[in-house]
Amino acid sequence: MKARYLLFAIAVCTGVVGGWLLIQPVGDNAFEGETVLELRQLLDREQERALALNESLSEYESLLADYQHEQKAHTAAAMEETLEDLEKNAGLTDREGGGLLIRIKPEEHPYETDQHVRVEHLRRLLNDLNRYEAEDVAIGHERITTQSAFREVNQIPHINGNPLPALPLTVYVLTDEPAELKSQMQVAESVQWLENDRANVNMTPAEAVSLPAFSQELRMQHFSANEEGEK
Amino acid sequence: MKNRGFQYGVALFLGLVALIVVTLLVDTEIGPPSSSSAAHVEWEQREHLQERIMSTQDKNRELEAELRLRQSEVSQLEEKAAETENSLQFITEQIEQLRMLEGEIAYEGPGVKVSLDDYSYIPEHHNPNDYIVHDRHVQQVIDELLAAGAEAVAVNGTRINRHSYIQCLGPVIEVDGTTSFAPFVITAIGPSETLSDALQLSGGTADQLLNEQIQVRIQQVAELSLPAHGMLEEEAL
Image 1: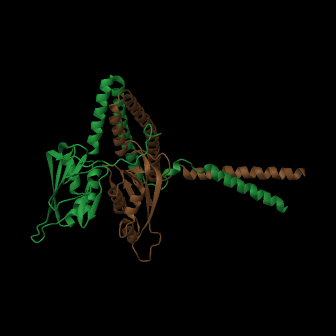
Image 2: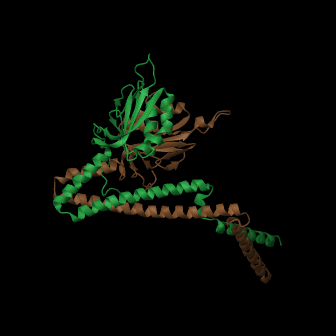
């Protein structure tokens, strides 16, 4: 008798557990616990990524068309053009164009002549500029590249290993939308930080902003030869 | 004995009935709430958004695969051109290297892996905010690595380039629109010993981070692969 009840109990339990497992939603659970707002933001990000992917895809497709259809001599020319574009994007050439000038000046201090900004604030400034899609940036004479390091050495800010001069300092920004960037930057946190640190920040859109080329060599010694890009 | 077989059958049947009942019960719980209309609207919104996110993600995966294919076709053509004409050899190499550097394609090589984690023990009456990793900590490690000769850097699998931004949103850090939680793993390709030594100088970055209640782990790695910018990681680091 006891064995029968036991068996019965086991069967019921198996049924309940089995049913529970069957029901567990598998895929949709990934978004569990996220609010509608968070879901919207996630969708926005994915859509932006789609846009970026499509852009690079069409770049590579037109390059492919160039290479395939042109004669040998032209292929060489097309490749040189590719290299020039890449060098331009990497910050290895001088650039000029419409943009924004950001002037950082000391507040009036008769007794302090060599006020420096904290490098942390400059990093934040670049962060904000990038968030608002600035195209290219130079801080003083230092062009920002993928390998630019921001550091403080003996309380003097260094970028690309070079010391920055004391204030005033100008940040040169290339952008297609100078007015929009200006209004976004005016309320940016980084500008508040600079101002809290006794600096005046002035922004003016300009038609011709010129950026110096990165004057050193980019470091590329440690990559493993990697056939066909990546697989 | 026959009786025993019958009992088994009944038990099995009852088990199945229980399964179906549970199925129905849970189903109604998960389905759209029918009574309250506000909850129903929100449920529908969520459903709709989730579907769109998933279909965009699927599309992006396809786009990524296609982009990788085109990239390898382009570099194949470039290499072929270089073979027929020696003068193009140099250009081809430079093109390839700049693409790796700017994060258009993956960058592989030796380097270091630095992981920053929130301090697990928070004393009573202390602000937990003082014990978590912030954007500036991640940024500080990146700058130190770059200054010591790092050639390419990624944070939790997101490649850093000249247009990158890092932002703190509470315990979450956003890098170029991709959010992730602690531990934050910063990977850098370059001279691994120099990079690791630079971080561990006495009074240097690692010490400063420890003083700010952050757990730091530094590892030299013989072969790292940093994904292209905006691409998902192909394999675990």
